[in-house]
Image 1: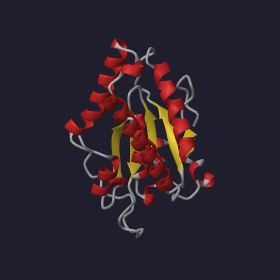
Image 2: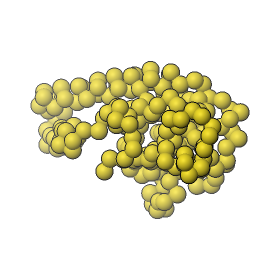
Image 3: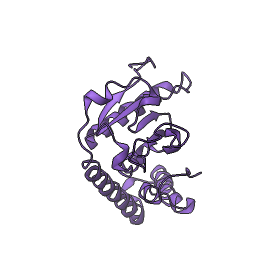
Length: 203
């Protein structure tokens, strides 16, 4: 289900498309996997190889585009984000990494630049909060689509392991956290990690 309240350009840049279009790359990947089990890789249909190459190229282009957009965000200000110790007070993008998806929380910028009524019932901060779950592979595009005003601390994100997981799933969750941190490093985004390998709070 699509989140409500996101600006249309934000959703467009996240690549939300009908489910039947999303299933096309997955269909090709399943086809390639089945074909790989039944015959040598050299005998795979050329169409499957071409599709895989096109998808890899598209992902690389998307990653480079996302990196260029994120580069427009100023460097992080440690004096600002290191002073924050609760999720509720964190104003930059916050990532909660799970076993299958990353939960992204964004506080959109206040459309009214004036100070009158800030944080009151007239202008509640929660009204500007948007949350959605994205695949790890889609995270660069999701971050690149966030408005510059939603990065008040500069180019830094908070990363936390999901607190809702089983003991059996925790190793996979931790691998996903490490992959997320590496992805952020590749994008030039500073990571402020909020949980350790055993789920202990770093903040």
